[in-house]
Amino acid sequence: PIYFFIFIGIVKSPSKKEWKVKIEPTTIDTELRITRRCNAHIKSEEEWRKFLQDHEIQEEIQLSTEINFDEVDIIGVFLGEQSTAGYSVEIDSCEITEGTLKINVNIETANSNSDSLFAAQVLTYPFALASIPKPGTTNTVFNFI
Image (tube, rainbow, N blue to C red; front, top):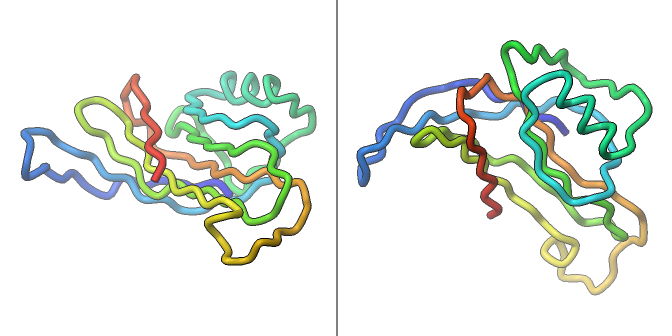
């Protein structure tokens, strides 16, 4: 899945003198088989092509929405190749605080999804991919919850 984020507001943190820009996701679908665990903040068409090349993706990737890199960046969280079913990843929220883009990510593993001792033996490539309006920041931090 890919998520598209829309700017929804600015919130002043009550405990600190800082401003937070909150962003909400909208899902966009595609299929990718990224075999290594990684995170990515992609800011241009050239960076997108390099990311795919670095991960040995040769075929044309069809996104369910058109990406205009003049207006948006892509955020990706990839869990790599997993040998069982039951893994998932979701970009929960994004915010810009003190010039840093903070991305909160939920990850579920095969062990956290079930009380069972059994899991289907199948190769999976869980990931979340999102587009967000250009945040105008240089730092990106991924927080895993």
